Length: 357
Image (cartoon, rainbow, N blue to C red; front, side, top):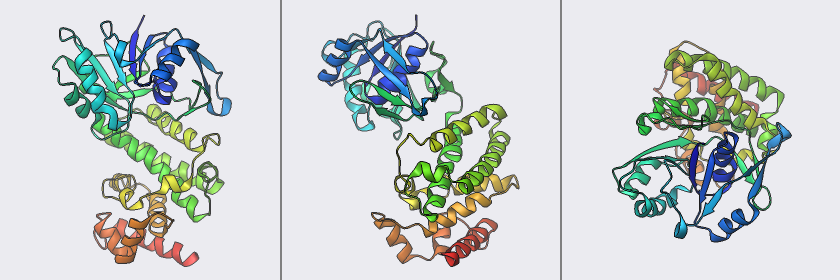
């Protein structure tokens, strides 16, 4: 039987990583600093995972053991997944540095969307007998009373294969991915770009609820149009399998359109100044699509809508728009050359949208 130690028994640790492990009949050990949570896990001996929209039957996760750091035993561990807030990685590393057997090699994966989490954790552990990889967590999970979790039915935890140094986890749904930097670009251009299409075009149409915006007929049409072209150019640029990229995109669409996931347009649209960066989720894919002479019109509309975006709390963005013309924002923040094709088309679309408001 496969074995896995999951550090952090919160909603991602138990509801996503724990669920993936349970689906493959792995032997699961949870470690968490919260003694009350650990006691509850050991007392109840199981918890339930239900899925947004009832897309599949609920499942029970059971047969695990749970410990605090005081009584944790890692002697039988080989694969460790760390699912804690990025700010807690150093503390986890310090604990692991005390507990890991220096005569055994360990494979560790961080499951937290954080800046360079594998390096932060590896430095904090301070041992040589470890391979520390990192993953990107796509799965949305929500605590659903007690230990129970409501979850998106996302099927994989993708992680950096190079940092695992040839190790392949026995749990097949924990998937090492080669050239992980390209995979992160793939995520940015597929997931994050699509999220912006929904958020900013939804804002222009007056939506505040994110799922309602995502299910708007005209926005869906544009979203599908952008997915189609983005899928095509990502396969051309990075050699991704067409069916695999289409599944990847469809999983993001399923997430965004799921009305049981409560979210807001404002949360997804916040900080447009960051998202308009030259290598970011709108200008980056536009450049790639333009490279292959494909249609960038949906992202042009999105960029134009971002220039029009305004909301309470966006003080930095309001300051930028006060101090800079749209033309200057396209040059300084987006890194577009004045008079270039993308610059001209975005500006034209912006002016048309502005005049219609």
